[in-house]
Amino acid sequence: SLNPLLYVLEKQGVKATFFIRTNHVSANPNLLRAIAQQGHQIACHTNNHIALVNDLDPGGIRTSSLTEEQAALLRKDLVESYQILWQYTGDLIIDGKPALSRMFRPPTLAVSKLGLSQVLDVGFDYSISGDYSTGDYEASGYQDMLNRLTWRSIGGGRCITIHNGSVIVMHMQGSAKYTAQALDEMIPKWRSRGYEFARIDDYLGS
Image (cartoon, rainbow, N blue to C red; front, side, top):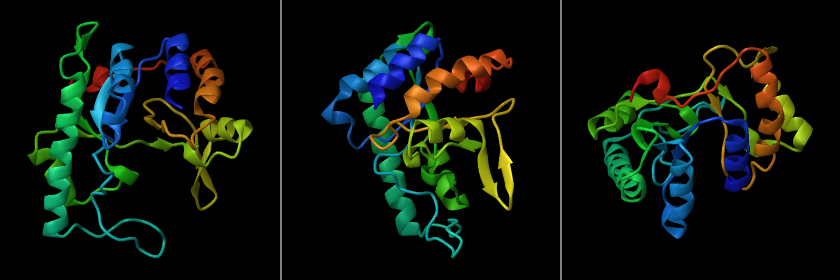
């Protein structure tokens, strides 16, 4: 799923920020370097996808804080994840920018005070969420993926669309099989509406 995505981003001249879950990087580190060498920003998404919150309420929303033991495991995971990213991309500077950043994306996008404190305490500068999560790993087909990039239901009969400042969350995994193809169609459409695209550090300066 990664190579078609990189091809489309290169074709469209778009640079993105990739939040990497690192527990499988060692199986093919060249893929990670390929992302960085194309000028995309590399950031952390944990090693083992450990959430910053605990438990689910009946509505499926993570709300409970971590225990101290869970926080310690998260802290260890964060350090290990960044060390893996540093091992393979810490030396890369592309177009005057370091490939590796000290940005972090929390799994499920949910945070707790204790969980977030671990992220900042080990040296990350920012925890980055997203206002437009496509759920592309659940897309049933190409048209469904186009629909997901056009509008998203947020419950209660409300929906959102891409707007100025949107941080769009997508995935590079086998089940997100229509993401690259749909982006190839939508990027020109968004540009025709006046939108531009950038790495997150272009806005935050990190």
